[in-house]
Amino acid sequence: MALVPDKWLAAARGLDRPRREGLIGAAGLLLGLLVMPLAIWLAGLATLGPYANGGFWALLGDFLRGLAEGSLACWIVLAGPYLFITLFRLLRLALQRIVQGA
Image 1 (cartoon, rainbow, N blue to C red):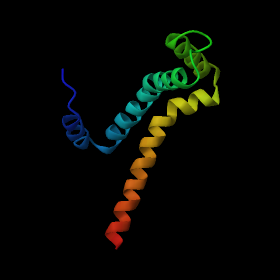
Image 2: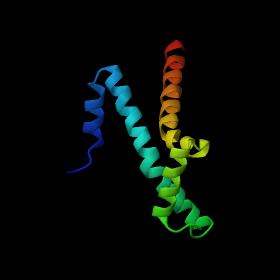
Image 3: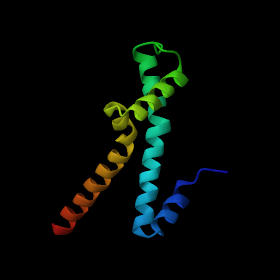
């Protein structure tokens, strides 16, 4: 199955607002859960060297354990992509309104 973002975007635009927001939220949280720990591990490996507790799977386990224990840093990593997407959407909306007002 090929990844075709244009088709996904067209399908998302056809959804009603609550479903679209839920889809955006789920995608952001999925990125925070799967992609962010990998990005953190790769950046740490490149700059600091190997992870002290083991490899990527050890870091992912520590991340999930941190989420379960309520670690603020882990929850910020998890919510980061969704918050970034939301900030981007708000800035785009503000720019649209500024351009329309000019």
